[in-house]
Image (tube, rainbow, N blue to C red):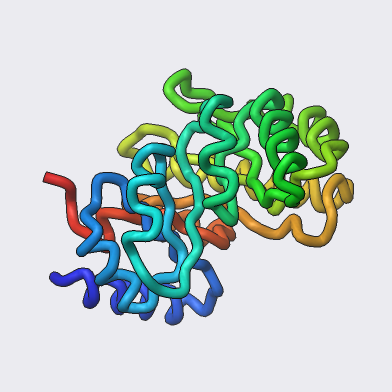
Length: 221
């Protein structure tokens, strides 16, 4: 199937579910031509995992869209990507929050971010553990040039959909608790969870942003 048809089918699926989940297109390793076709079909959110690949693609695709940064962010790359991304999904430690805050202050901007939570406690994944989340949210809330818009997680590396659901359900519980505590302001409204293999379960558990690549582009060769 074509990129255009895949986008249409995914949109129809989301509409039939009666939700307003946003589609973020993960563009890792994808060609400019393929990304442009997706943009021409109405995609408005693009996500990159690596700063260098983001920098290389900036300006080469045209349309009304925003770049998000969705990968692990190194401190020395913050100043490179900060002016380029409307939302950073991967604030996975307090140190990186401080660095973003510092560089955003230099630019005179308030940077929108999501806090990454390691709901599966896998060593291969970054993010705050659930038991440390509230304490770190309270610390991050004191930073002046960061606006925390919500939470992000990745499901457990498992073939069992019940394991994926457990991660997403846990993130939503954390999200509701932080909302109830009013740690952040009213912009705290996003749950970025769900990728190509598990987005249906993520949407069922309240995802507001799904990060999909192969669902649109097909499997990488």
